[in-house]
Image (cartoon, rainbow, N blue to C red):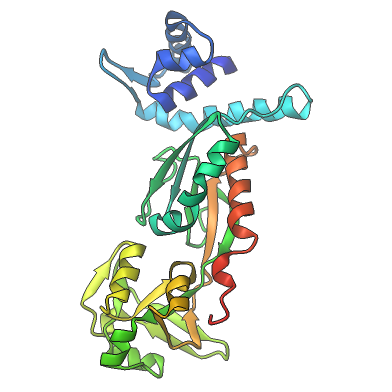
Length: 305
């Protein structure tokens, strides 16, 4: 199978334009169309749907795309290992991340990364809603959940400690809980659903943050909205330290039950589809995020935590 044809397919899938992809690879429009048609005949499937108005990725093409990307990455790495060139950092990197974390820590440093990689384009999907990375054809994602899916590999970016917070106004009106059991008489803001979350302290004590058993009136599915509602005095919420450390420092938020934190050992993972060779574009972005964020996470330096 001609790797040049695979490169044409991958680039066409990214641009959704066969002629533009061929032009980037130094091919005339007629040549690029012929090469892609030849690849489809070899595979016995239609990779891209064409019409006079647009090009779209077929279902079979979406399934084949990660394998084509892997073959290209293998070839680039092999030539780099032999000293016959270096792995090219180009194309489009599709990256998915929780919106709140990305807005605080990734988007502000994107300009620096793109300046370092002028041939690379970055396509960001920012949402606190979980979705299928393979189906969405994403190269890399940030997840704040256990790395349980064996079809993915991951690099740890940082710990994701969760703590209880409330606004000074809420505390002045309702008061502070003294034990986890006291949370049942408070307004708890639920995140995504009413699922109970375990709590623990340093001495082996346990408790529960359970909006379903408390005076819960509000459920949100976005981390920034969770923090904003807490700042507005809507109740007590369980937040990631990286999200609220600045508000705790300024006094806009108060830590509730300071001896307790979320019992889950949450970690921020950079995850990508399992493969033998990591593509250059994914590798450079992971290295950049590790250097800029993971070395000394700013939210872990706060003494009040």
